[in-house]
Amino acid sequence: MKSTINQKFNELFGGHGRMFASAGRVNLIGEHTDYNGGYVFPGAIDCGIMAEIRPNGTSKVRLYSIDFQEQVEFGLNEEDKPAQSWASYVFGVCRETIKRGGKVEGFDAVFAGDVPLGAGLSSSAALESTFAFALNELFGNGFDKFELAKIGQSTEHNYCGVKCGIMDQFASVFGRKGSLIRLNCKTLEYKYFPFDPQGYKVVLVDSCVKHELASSAYNKRRESCERASAAIKKNHPEIDCLSDCKRVWLDEVRGEISQEDFLRAEYVIGEVQRVLDVCDALERGDYETVGELMYQTHFGLSRLYEVSCEELDFLNKLARKCDVTGSRVMGGGFGGCTINLVKDELYGAFIDAVNTQFTQKFGHAPKIYDVVISDGAREIC
Ligand code: ADP
Ligand code: MG
Picture 1: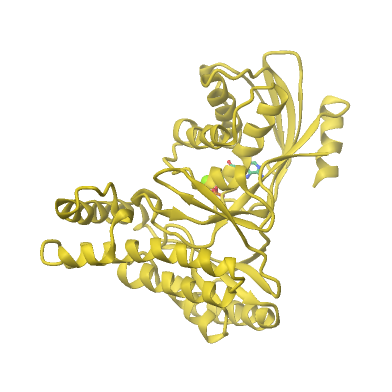
Picture 2: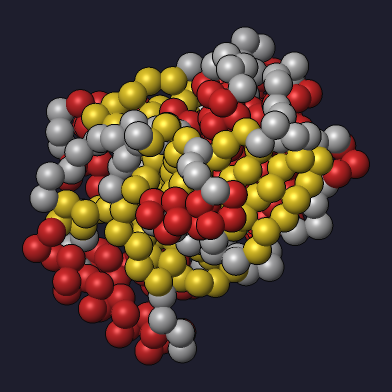
């Protein structure tokens, strides 16, 4: 990828600039916990975006996308937003940097990526953090990493119409090879934990379905969580959100909330604890326990939180049948990927089973992505 970018840059702009990269991400465990003030546990992966960039001494940005084979030119004022949606991610990063008092002048850039688009691996965060990091270095703005992640998040909110949380950009900026990062979504405290599963592969199986339910169900789940935590707060005024609650406190309000709200809250409280348990297990290098907790999360998402679907439950059951160590739906649910922790020696049989049995049942093949936990935003020499 690097030499293709260098060649194109030289062809379009002459000479060379500096090279930057960032990564997509996975979330090992900690699902639907972010808006409940709980933990997520993401890491950057070995696919991402790479860009060659050089200031051009003008007030214009000239941007070439290798993957879309298209060049776009835009100014740096609010009214200069390009029509191409892929370019508006970079425009947004420029604008959000400027809004925070950072300097951005005209530059030339060529970039390419290998994160599958829209598969739940956050290709958009990879794109944002590559440019947020690069502009910070090139124009000497001195923003810290949190600010760079927030520049990416605000880009999604203000220029791409996606009201996302901070996890994707956080993981993409802070990612570190061989580590996952536990992020407390309430306090934004974070801690690295070793993740180097020798003898196992991390495999994503993309069901390639997206059910329509997703956004209305998401809002309903949030409302259930708010009702449950409001009920608990009457007895325990010190809590701010559901992730502060102990399981026994939920039992105290069982008669006051609906059965549905109870199950949703039961899942969230359990999931916050599972993230902590996974972290303990990783410190012991105990990947079998990690895997078992992933299955528990899937059960919770499917039966208590009810955000799974037939395709994802099928993939999860098939993983169990193939003796896969851990498997669960990753992301908001109702489609997308499962994330699986698979022993090397079982990998071939699992992939064969997934390809044949899933395709037979649902009439289309799933997509398989093997990932390795890798570095996030950085300059490449
Ligand atoms: P994801 O879940 O992968 O983040 P999004 O819909 O949020 O999905 O972001 C995908 C969008 O990000 C693409 O449609 C494109 O506009 C932009 N993008 C991601 N990767 C690239 C790339 N390699 N080249 C150009 N644009 C990209
Ligand atoms: Mg995205």
